[in-house]
Length: 273
Image (cartoon, rainbow, N blue to C red):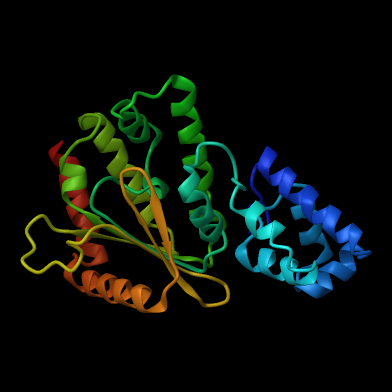
């Protein structure tokens, strides 16, 4: 994940690390020897085993091959969370997101978690049904705030967001929450690795009417997609499906306002509040 980007440890991370260490030692391998087999440094191996680093998919697959292909690590990886507050169906995507070199997000329902403010996230949580208690709301925000570090800590990752204009016009949480939300989005848009475009309210041709799109590129240059519904999410690896979603996203980038015009629109909307 890069220097300073190791996640806060959790029970699931420490448990996964302990399983890796036990299997490695059972195979009679030192951390350095194991690292050579999986093509990761011994320091990375140590971070995973101590529960300080989120294991990405390439580590899990290489470790499986090096330790006998028992399937134990693949199954265990599905239960690893960076920290509490992430939906079970989102965790695998979050692990991939943490090491992605490209991340594209189109959202039509709410501001994506990577761009939310605490006040906006609290307003969303307050409207949740069934209702959440205070601890759950704080847990969800902590998870989102941790994910948001990716924007600044992964400076070599290219982030692109296409956001519907009506997400701001809805004024979720009220005018003051929306003002601060727009301020935050404008601040994030100044990062060199982030591009934010707004899809205007009036748009006669729109390639995203089928719903939100999330796309990412792994360090191995493989592309994946993610779709989320009311009570579940789907990780998509089929190249044909991913290709269709990539083409839709590319078309939307041409249909949305330019980056400069998007910034101008956001500033005008903020002035109208």
